[in-house]
Length: 147
Image (tube, rainbow, N blue to C red; front, top):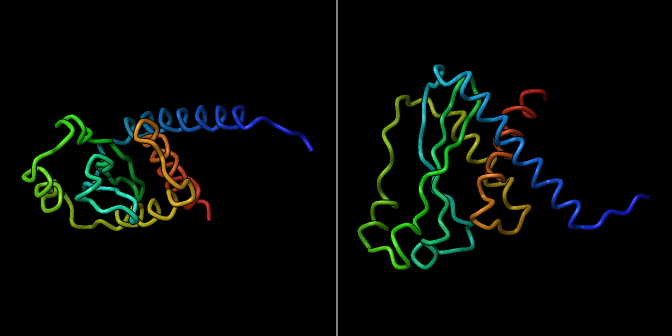
């Protein structure tokens, strides 16, 4: 059995996720004219309450095309300072971006997939969240199609 140091493994997966993010951008740019719907998603681990953890909220936009998805990270809530006001909290809880399609199957399927996928990592820091999101996107788009 070959033993590897944990730092080597972590470095490998970090680079792997970065490559997946680049691949997703290239693929989406080739297919952006095929977008049939989009919706925004606010992710916070289920164990956290939004009122007390609004600074940990991950906000992204999911677009669908050809039964695949592409995700864009939205600006962090942290840009509003250490204590976002109650109006911003109310906005995030009750408003959504307008959709161009009501057929949201691929998008909602992805969100369900993502919620299960991210649990295995027991917390992801906000700096690297996009890479885990892109890994989930890639797995959803590529691996589930081949089943």
